Length: 183
Image (cartoon, rainbow, N blue to C red):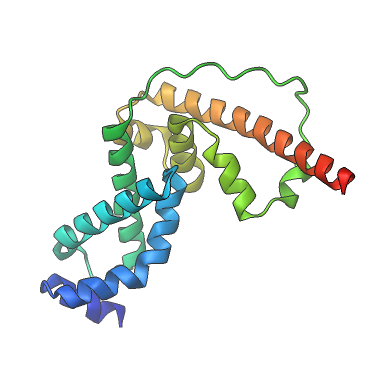
């Protein structure tokens, strides 16, 4: 089914473009939400991605899987979106945590919404670099090429993102424990 739709999209058939868009909407929107703070931003990244997909679909090699090609375009579009709409300015240093210890079991109690909420609290550049490195698997060299940052800045942002995440996870875990105690 997918191969036929892609072939028809290459022929410029609008109805098949709509089918392809609907077929991959949830998958694509999930990727967009990792990079966007708002639904509006995610929708904009998604729509820009599909415009690029339909403009370049003739370059897609039908012998290869479509999803990785689609994902690459979406991630690159998200990077372009943030490069265009934000500046990577030096970030304020993260305040030192009062308690450096970390409860490793805290993360086991989280669901997807908890994790998404915590990731949404990261400053934009930290979140972008964290997603590209930890989730998408890019190297710091690749991130530097895609974002225009130095490799050392990418490494620094990743380290700061991880430090901030540890603080946020611990804080979230403490709030959950307080709620359970009150209940």
